[in-house]
Length: 390
Image (cartoon, rainbow, N blue to C red; front, side):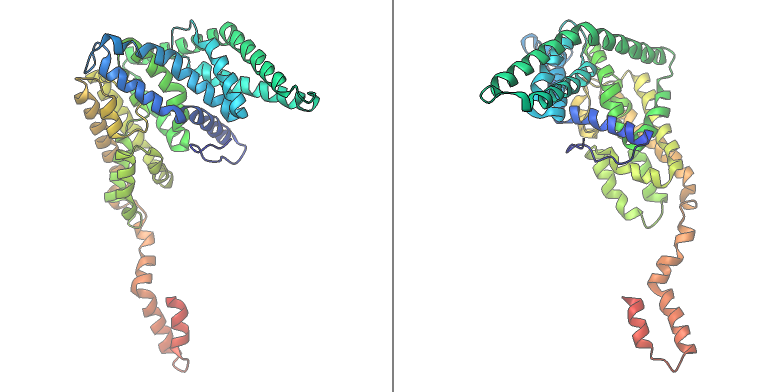
């Protein structure tokens, strides 16, 4: 299912299937990103460690993250599957996994919303031609109510414990990496996944929920910066600008603005795919940035979406700007340095093979034509020259 936020995926291989999953996750989260930003701003301003501590306003933080945002995700997931009726039962089903969970139930919402809407879609298809005229509204309302209520009970009984366990396992794994100072190794997996356009699946499906849970406890989380750091992409593009193929350099400045200021990281993925060895630069920059975040104890209060430097500034807690900006800067510097080496400082970018073509277009081709015309003096040059210059 294509959405305004995800492209149409073709093919049936494992890569295509994973991309579709990532597209579904992004389609549920991205329409609600404004609500995430609102929660992040409320958190940054009004929690006890915020810019404007306020107990009454700070009380908005927990209900928003534990109830509102998961319900919005479940609602959107249900709508993607079965329109407005699917949205309603998706929201009702999500309440089942939210109540009593004690953690942000994003993963549970991503499961229950679409699943319940799909069940309702099957039921609607079965009873549509079997409902007597005049009873359509009665049947529609009761089927939605019964399926939504049953899904809420099932989610509370069956899905909530599973999601809680999965979240605990993932959190323990990340905690193990942190305690053993190995969290930078996450870039070895995250950066290649990003280049395959799985960034939304990684960020919103895995790291985002972990970050939200950690931020709810500690007021900030490094998880929000593992995938979204704009530094590695900026460094790769800067290496392309100075040492990449000359025919691509004019397009790089605009890409840098879109990536670093606009937060649209997808703009630099094709540059890496054209020179796959540059994935090493992105991985090195990502690892260096995470290492810097760990050393400086940096973190954000919410997911910076899109991953713009402006979003980073908006989601940085009071007193945390040094570590956040330093991590972004070091990530950019390391990815630039490694990328420059991988491009051979301009000697390994393919210009040697591509130079004759621009030169020919500029002046060598007419010279060759002149030589040919000198050999064939009896032929009129004008008719042949015109097509070559067209």
